[in-house]
Length: 257
Image (tube, rainbow, N blue to C red):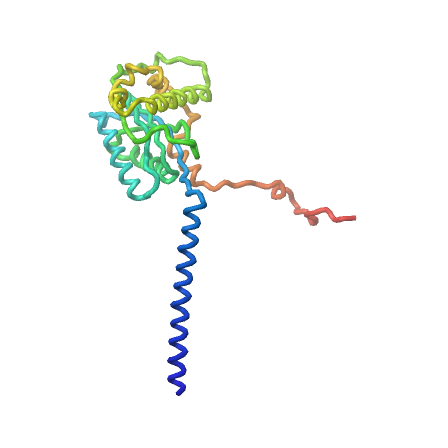
């Protein structure tokens, strides 16, 4: 009799557990439906990275640099499964300037790869400097990632002279890139390829001068990828005024009289 009662209680307990799971699943599905109908979808934050670098002697064909980043972004996108990378890589005879738009994880991974790539034996880039890292940008400038080799004569850095500070030169360079992005965004898709292939002919005023890029690469005020990542991973310590007082005060708060 005791055995039959225990088996009966076990059946009832199992049925109640199954019923509870059904109720939980029903409530969960109902909540998800309400969230989809009435709550806005979660928006992923997009950030923009712009950096410059010097081309090395290992780069025999400048198109190899574009192929390298195409493979890199495919690999990173498969790993992070987040926002894809969009942007534009402009390759000059001696330098390059790269604009990348994606998630924070993708951009950080891009900088890590840049650091390790510069330290490798067959590096294609060297002396990279970060112009800006813009967080939570309202919209993308580029619908996809692409690269272009600019057929320009090599620059002579000794010709570039300026008294303007870095704080003024960098915004001017970034303004040109933003205007270039707006120009490409307004170009019809049918004419986009021709426009990209003739940037140095149609809109040379929207391309940062290569002399300026070479000048910025020698600046000590701009962070290298190594310096940026070190600051990114280093915790921020704040020293309170109370920690500088010795001996420690007995009364931390004033007493009411």
